[in-house]
Image (cartoon, rainbow, N blue to C red; front, top):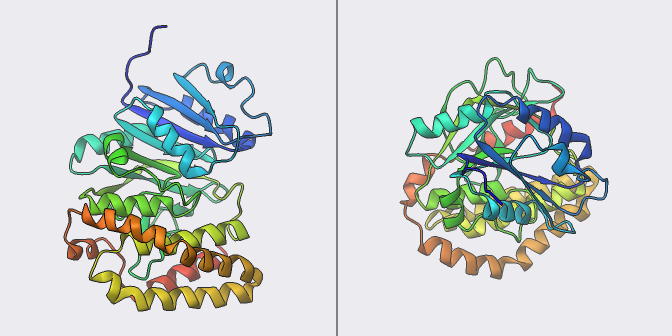
Length: 335
């Protein structure tokens, strides 16, 4: 068997019952102006038949399909995809994120023009309302909260500037494969949600930087399977949020910011309880505490290998006391 040439990039798509999105994603990838890429599809045990005959339907691409036989989670699926990848750059793409034709070319061009960066974030538009942003990369707040920059704001006014950000949103992100693996990839204990923030944090502790690329545009459906306010997203989002603070926040900020982190978690716990999802949020908190000893073991290794000064991290974190409140309002108001 003759192997195709090693590509510049490997696009990794983790799927689970994604039949309603896969073919539209394929159509968008066929229109890419830069075609020196391969695709790795990792199936988390789909039962909707969406991958039946996929090798024939996607024969326009160098394609490798890995079938896991069960839902191992977004983190495991992507880690497997990265290990199978051959490209220098790994590009994570959700099945419900549809890239514009110059998307990949813009990401790789940004990498070539900015050699000091190891991760790159796309500009995400809301699929049903493309005049509104779905995100311009991820922000991380000193309380431990995180959000997508400029979410729900007008796309013609916000997210237009290429700049350094905290980390990319994994719905449409590009990483150096070497640095991704060196950092240990996604934490597989997370299963799903907040894994990209955690990885971005660890990459930063290792000295890596992330750049937002406004010309790399995707239209993103978002939460296609789990729902934006589902018990699933509440549980994994808040559990993993706490684990990320425990593992990644370096001293002395960990101890100085711990009271703010605890107060923030309690505020949202009571709010979400009043919203009718008390079981999900309190399960998340209790399980995060139960898993804290394991996270502290990971913390010891992560912090031991850190290469940047703690003060340098504050430069790329959100530090405004009322920023989480403003972001919360943007997410709850109607467009």
